[in-house]
Image 1 (cartoon, rainbow, N blue to C red):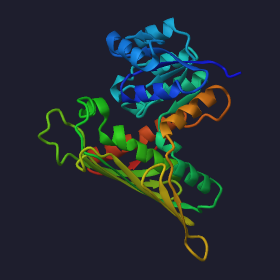
Image 2 (spheres, rainbow, N blue to C red):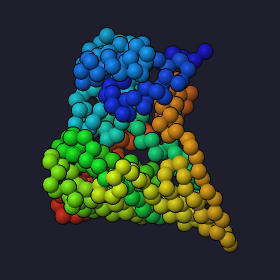
Image 3 (tube, one colour):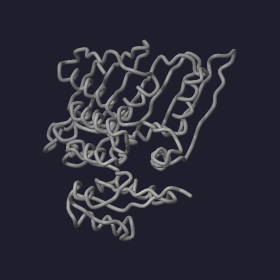
Image 4 (cartoon, rainbow, N blue to C red):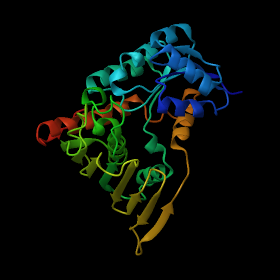
Length: 335
């Protein structure tokens, strides 16, 4: 018989709604509490997404005190992380966090220490790691079929003012922090630990937009300790209404061209002929990551992408922005 899992959700925007839907599709999982910025928002979420089954709160600590939870999903903007993770971990509650896990590594280090010190299961919402094609390339790298990873070339582009907090660097950290961190995380996922970083950013198309203090153009070069390299560029000046993430990974025996985490063309170059394979999947990566988290919580699978991975990728994008703020000065990545 499956162990019943009681889950609370803090942060009731798009990601909170998405996770609620997937949680409720897993046998034995209940969303028993939800916490929003106001009680009215929490009550509306409860009715819309749990059929009124969950208790509604406007204060996170009150929710933890009154509820008996096995796990909590923390889907808050970067600026809103104010001890929720530490509070949950201190009560032995597993945590799923959306990225970026904090606005800076000082806060993230405290969060990581609390989770690891309490020994609770954790997972960061790097959903691209769960893409069918991404998982296949990772497997081929690990078993040696792909050969030596040498280069990651990533690009992210969109064109949106987003919400007011997103456009304020003091609240979101900027596009590199809040969006492109997914691509930086993939580079680390395939190539390992960074060594040296140099980055550049600019606001070229939103100088007149009220309250817009984040970059809309960025580029970074990263050398990894293995000797592999990555180039990652991003733009918020591209096609309105489109969010595009593409990347290429070149290994000594395989080149992989990704149009998404699920879709890629693999060209195997280790033999006498270049063999091509196409991977196309409709896998719901958000559902897959939640299935993995619940499995780890039940002891039925490994802990995938724990909080320390969120700290590592946060440190990388923080280094990119530190470099950009100092006219591209090379930054050493230190764990």
